[in-house]
Image 1 (cartoon, rainbow, N blue to C red):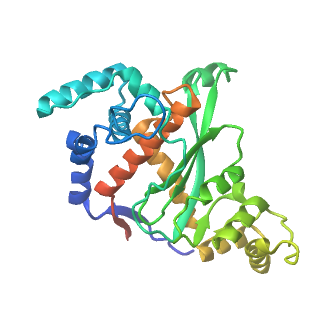
Image 2 (cartoon, rainbow, N blue to C red; image 1 turned 135 degrees about the vertical axis):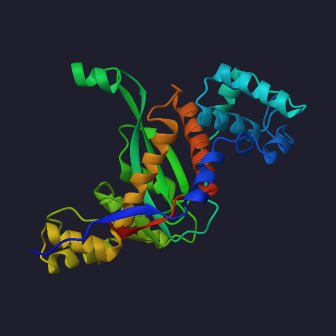
Length: 318
């Protein structure tokens, strides 16, 4: 028998990472100088009465609400006291105005990343809107009133930034959202990672036209496609041939994933773990437009936390 060496993952930048964790609670991080400078709307081209508060002011309020988990009325009180303590002569919007304007943010998919990226990870997860908690479900079974929304993200595995985020109905499949998000990806993206839910012709065709290589494990028993009719299935055919050549079993699929670097896809799940740890696994808003504004603000906030500092470590022998 061979002795397997046990390893441990240890963080090597504790001092830097510890300062980043402390800064996440700093008020000046979220109520920044740039937010103060753009608090009042400079121009508005829409119909009706000109807006007094800018979109940046509403976004700032929503980020503070998400980070400190405040309801709308408590948020207004928090902002009023914050402006007073900082000695600023800024008006604070009413909680009803923040709620109404939140429905206008995040409706269009936008590029949230700040760094050039070559790889992207697609993944999705569920967020609860309302319904009984997990304890009651475990004790008494599921409830008909339990409602969920699905959040889709495109994450950079190098910087851990959320590049794109989108909220959809629970019934919308992952592969149906990819074309909506692909148009807003940076031009530098060359590879995309996704699980078996993205193993659909729609995704391969969309990535092919964008010049992006999809690294997606084909389903078991997958067959080759005619490239004369479907040239966008070439990457999938290559994956099927490689897995078949390696033995066409579970071990062959594991080897193929290692060769293709498919393990980077798990960083999408890590991103959702960080998301739900920071903001919880449920949505406070009840209507989809408001929920998309909430998701948009939380995505911006999580990217800000990421930019403050991330743990860096390596595996060492125990």
